[in-house]
Image (cartoon, rainbow, N blue to C red; front, side, top):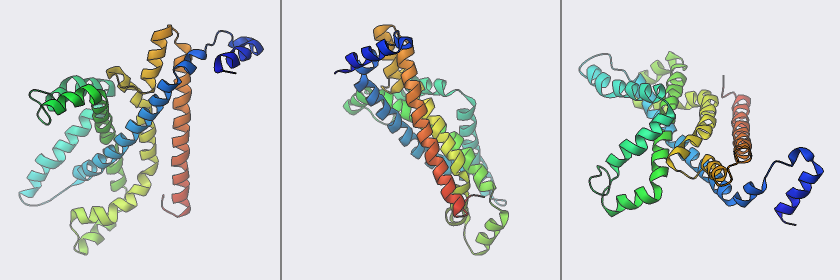
Length: 266
């Protein structure tokens, strides 16, 4: 028995489902499976890269020298650029950022003729084969990095000042203090908001379908356009997103409980 026959029998048994055509979803199942893979893949990479950006930007926003010329150099070339980055990406819509990066920024960086970073045949191949993926990944990474920056900043500031003072009295400089003393303690406290940010990014990745990336929302839009039916594809991807977010939330909750049992989160 194939799926069409199975669903027909279900519709006969449950009259309320007579107008629900899941056959169109089954026909495009490969597209939805590929969409799930792309959604998870781009989310995972964006979270990892965004966490690295957030770590360094969070430390940059808190970097401080009280005396000498380094005070002004640090302010103008480290703290202010970090503040500008966070302000822009937290203060503008992600959808606008995706369009801006895809249609304005990436053509400047990767272009067959005059690309700043990559040009020639390689640039042409990258834009043709992976243009939407690169733009979407850059936008999601920079956006998540801005929010994770604030998570790191708040986590670092939650550590008692005595930890800083004790580290500096042992001869550690600012970066050594952050690396060996502050960040390991702060990271455990930052785990819950970092998990929430990953979940938000998973859902926000649906916006990348606007530039043609074949993820879940793109799959639903393709099926809706082919059959002029919208309930089935969008309801199905809603359930898929719900399942993925619930699994991620369960994973974050498990990590939180594990750290609480070991006394790591206070």
